[in-house]
Image (cartoon, rainbow, N blue to C red; front, side, top):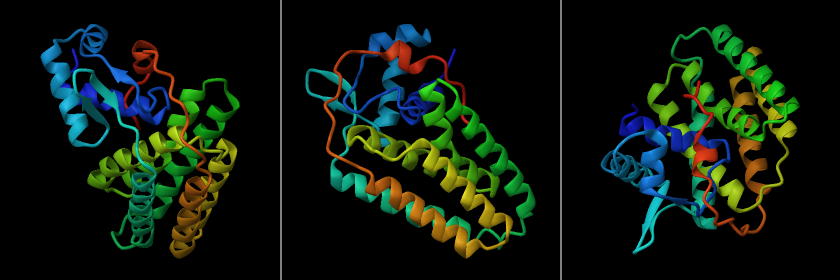
Length: 228
């Protein structure tokens, strides 16, 4: 039986996989039935997600996935640029062997390529988003990995809401170029490529989409394990 943190994590993972959409209702009883827990535990998980900026309470209507404004969107991308380029510029300072970092990231890029070739759009979206979490984890930054998971999930909501046109294969190719720069030991170039990559995703945003109001909780929250 999951605890509130595990329930919250499943919701974030479903956002990363673009299975939960901005503005989607999160019914307490539906979640309780899905996870086999009490509504009290679900409420605690939703309050945790509210504190992290992923859900909101609407008066007399219940809990909903947030719909970020365009200003909040740009703020989230700016935060990601600051964190991820900073991670890369300092990557050689901790004495962590970059070969191990490169090996793990190359494996991740291969998994991304496999997901892109497959038919599961949710796995593809999740793997592309998870690259950035994997980068922080492979560099030994557990705290920043958690922060990046939340920031990446926020920008995933943004990309979903504002109908991003950024192509999955382009994202994967940009990830591969970043890893290649790390492999060469050129961390300045890696940081510059990361900045360009995040900028490309941000610049691909369009207008806000009309969100489908139908409830898809069971489909959205099933089938995802914990992230790498």
